Length: 588
Image (cartoon, rainbow, N blue to C red):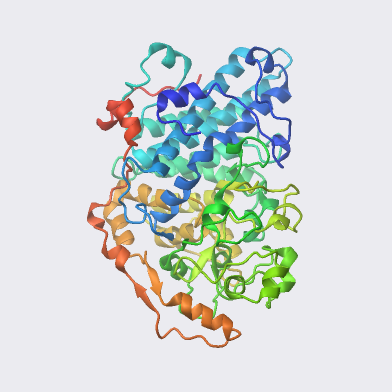
């Protein structure tokens, strides 16, 4: 689904809807074609129409999701223009990301219109509102990405009249302030329409919308160049309501959030809920881009040349040049796979073939014993660790076929080539807790002793670091770092920098300039010797950090807005013009 401009994204929204998944609300026959005038006649039909917005139109955003969110932010090391801030308007992932976001908006607009105009008398008002509320949350999420990536963008409130007018290629950019207000308008109406509890596990509810609204207010607070206390207070208000009244709780074990069994856990407020076996664009393809070659049976893995940055590893308190794993923060192992780490949730069916009793990166990569390799169905890293930072990716990986379907944390359905059903969490309860803490700290002058803020932060931090003690005072800097560790590899960190740049651009630039975005010379050889010696000979005397990447970057010129795709600018020349203050539409 590679839609090159707003016109086609608007028009493509007529292609509603059909999918199938291991989530109950997606587990239904495909509706690849039907007559829209007769389809919206039952509550079940209404529910099925909204299911597609949880996956298909988002598919082409997957690569942009981690390249923007993680590579640009310095969390992920990958040879890419995103690593060096040299992305231009011809970049394929940028083009696909933009098209995906406009497609989401078109789908949502069409769904709302169809429910209003075509829903039959057998449908109930509650379900009609629920489906429209889901569409508004996804529409708000699409615009939240658009404004943080491109700054001011056109507001496409409704499709039909726009297509009829022929003005779809002459839309002007609204200001970022306008766009944030539009997102708020969408979410406020969604909160009014949505139920307090999801009708089915995994669906969006009122508190999903409130959690997103809290995050939007925290971001909007600085968009004028200085912090707006009223916006910060609203962020606290909505985040506190989610914390105290949603009935949701943090998942006890952090890693389980990111296993198929955690797809619809209580902590997940908004997620892409992927499926296997339906249309091509309905599946999760992250593992192919993020795992080491040979990681599963299908030969569809090529992601070993990207991995956690040295900077992220050190932020967790670990050291690529040490054979000892600190493990004080359980999130490190769930995010950065390092030599000696044992993963009981990868390759459960081959655990006995590893010397440490579970999947271990060095054993996978460097064990060249023919019998061992054969016993593992010839799945092997073939002697290559890929990226030379001393770590590999963990989040977004499912493992082999057994792990996905029948493993302890599996989802019960088979996966396919470049296709898993692992959910991608876009907003978690922990994120909302940290939004609450940060907004309160900013209100209180960068340090807070507010009980709600402390409780929110402590719940997140002490889950990750069980030996830690509760804090009684909380600084903005502490929360800022906690967000990085809690949400690393979840496509979020770059947008923290965008938010900070609104009101303190120098601080955002300074942190980016201080990062270790490069690789470690000699680390692969050291890891190989370490494994071959039976984990006894750890010699890093020939290892050193290579700072060539950051040395090549002019951080003073780094921009916190991405360029519009050239294809979009050619179609609509107004995209190269400055945003214009506009009247912001709302839903009655």
